[in-house]
Length: 168
Image (cartoon, rainbow, N blue to C red; front, side):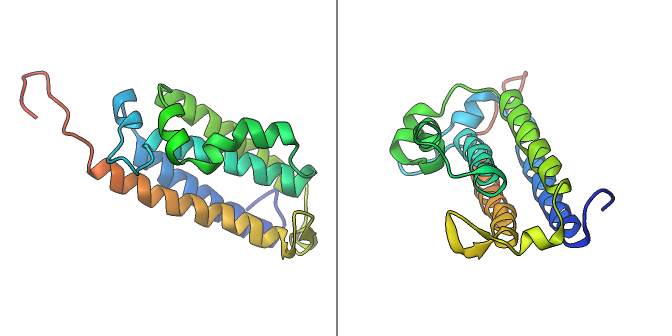
C-alpha cells in the first residue's frame, strides 16, 4: 500500500478490511437497535462500537506514545471493560457519532503507522515486553473482527422493525 513500508502496508490492509466489514455490519442501525440488549448478559451493538474505539485509542497511546495515564484508564474503563456498568452507561449515542469516532481513531492509527517502518514493528512494547508492535496491531485487527462477529450475531436477533404499513 502506497505510503507504508511493506509489512506495515499488509497490516494496514488487514485493518482497513476489518473496518470496512464492521461498518457494513452496522449500516442503517437506529438508536434503539444500537442500544438493544439481547439478554441480561449481552453488550449492546453501540457498546461494542464504543469498545472498538477506546481499544484502538488505547493501543495507539501504548505503542506510539507512552503508557496510559490513570485519567485515561478511568475515562475509558467502562467502554474497555463493558459488562454490567457498560450495559447501563453506554447508551443513547446515535450511529453517526460512533462512525465519526471510528473514522477519527483509524485516521490517527494510519498516520502513525505511515511514520514508522517495518523495523519498528519488531520492537517490543513497554506495557508487555514479550509482545512486539506487530503483534499488538494484528491483535487490533483480530479484536475488531471478533466483535464484528458479535455485532452481526446481535443484529440478526434484533426485534423486527415495523414498516410504515404496520407489517413487519
